[in-house]
Length: 486
Image (cartoon, rainbow, N blue to C red; front, side, top):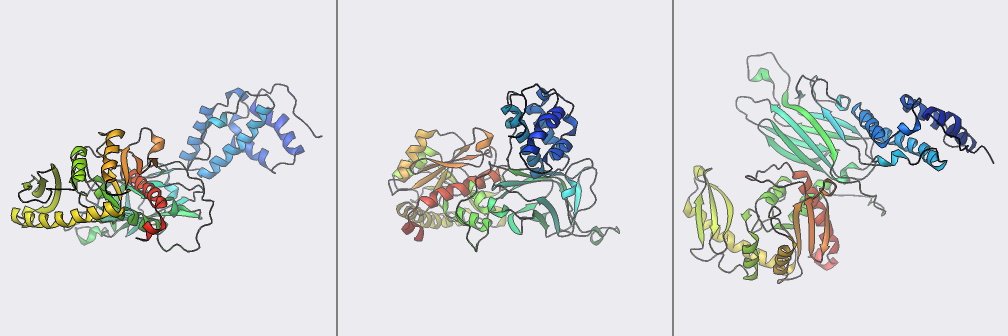
């Protein structure tokens, strides 16, 4: 029969382990060494009453351990061990509930490296770093490496770099940066000074390995001695103050299907191809810049356009009649020196990327626009009729579902099309998530929109990339083999 726990009240955590839990473990021949590890890891709690082991206290312990650079997997393992112990205490009616169940076990781990004096995470630094400075740390040479522990659960991640500045030779006012995860590039930017950048890392790149290698490549690192009157021969690139590696969605369950033996394309190339299949219907340029950031450059009519939803629906209903008519085009010159085209028929405006200081003229813009609009209008009609694109629209949360349904209905007058509607996530757990809510309508939840002038690098880029990735998979999985072949 063995020893069974008595119903007597146990006053302290240590007494419960020694007098009740340890004898039960020994009798039932459970995992060898578990009791001693439990007492070692939680030694500071052994003299405390069982009632003092609250969820808040356990969560505080978890965060302190992570800040001390403990491996997240070891922290979770310790919490699972504690949970098993306290489950027995509940079963034997020593405590009313298990406080560990109020702590998020199994969550995707996150890492932070604070590259300044007194910061955390310095143990993850590998080659390519100067000694940690007071406020930031210089990179040394063409590459700087951060090595993180392997992640067991499949989840998409975001890399966030906070750059305090760059080394600026006299003839160079920028540093080209390439960020890679496990030898696969996940983003390229041109940095001109203090900035914050985000990069999307698909779960596909984080399959369990011995570790995760994050590489920051700097093509323009140079020696101060080559440009200044100094003996400093270090190859300097960036002053970095913080590196973050955080999950942007909840961990996904593992795919029950066996993985293919050979994968000819990296996840980044797959993201690029997915974005190439997607056609922006406007409201502004934010999705167009997302495509450009990933290296996708589809020729879409409204990719760089301002398109209010009422006029967009009307234009689709009228099959773009009058868009390319004579005298329909109004050319304007912005304060930045770029020519902007406005179409009187529907009030659409878009960038031409033709600059007056570089030799641009109204005549040149007008000629180019008539050719461009004619070609891309025909292309859009074909895409709508043949249903070869996943169409994308947002207007920064202005439109509600009934209006979006009208837009989808206008798209479906040409064929059975699908629309991705991008909105701000109502809660943090939905950021980066996409789901089909009605036939032909997918909703994607992003962290936010650029409310001012839209720039090429969005602070919300990672969540947009995650939404695009998932929405494309939903759309692609729903298409017939014949449609995919086409």
